[in-house]
Amino acid sequence: MIVIDPPINLCSLLESQNLWPVAIFNTHHHFDHIDGNSALFKKYPHLSIFGGCYDVDRNRIPYATKGLKDGEEICIKNYIVKAYHVPGHTLGHMMYLFTHKTLNIQHIFCGDLLFGAGCGRVLEGSFKEQAPQLLQSLNILKSLDTSIPIWCAHEYTQKNIEFSLSLIPEDIPLQKRQLSLSIPSVPLNLAIEKESNLFLRCDDLYLQDYFKQPDSLSLFCFLRMKRNHY
Ligand SMILES: [Zn+2]
Image (tube, rainbow, N blue to C red; front, top):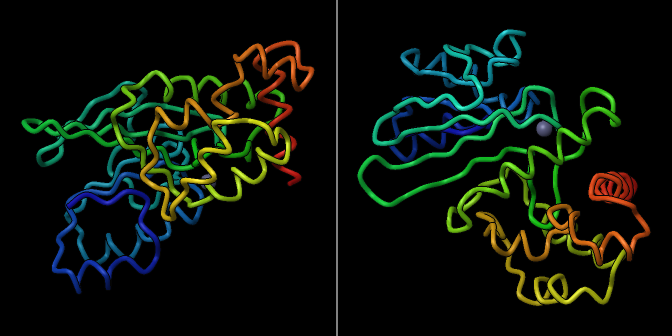
């Protein structure tokens, strides 16, 4: 099996399920995404451990065996894994697209880039420099096939919908989403995100006008700052 962003207590779970990990992919260096690397590596020293080049070069991914570049593809078991450098939440943040070699199965693991009805916050570098990066990274995710399930790293959907409706209570896609929400909401559906997630709708002229923002980046920064203080 392949593990993404292992938590610290994963070893005992794998043992109890008789699962044998062959690789770890870390999306970024925050402790809640790399905490399990050490225990897993000690128990399964054959493991391949991947992170982004930026983080691996800075020794921020414990026991990393290889840093991946933007656009790089590698084969692991039955999957081709494509790495995307998607900075914004952190400078080295990565997203991984898994494509099964023979079956029609794909999965996106986006770490803290996108959340249900929300997105990650800028936690490294200056907001002024990194907010445009974050928006650009979300646009990369937005351009992927909407049928591919998206596995984000935290379940924040309910709170993000509440936040969004506090800003624009009459928004129909958000109202619909709140009514139909079931937890867990992960994996996320990209079509639903594009329709309802305000952070993915910043190029919507109606919303720019509604929030009195002159362009998509201004609206994105406005929303992100509001969410930081919600
Ligand atoms: Zn993080």
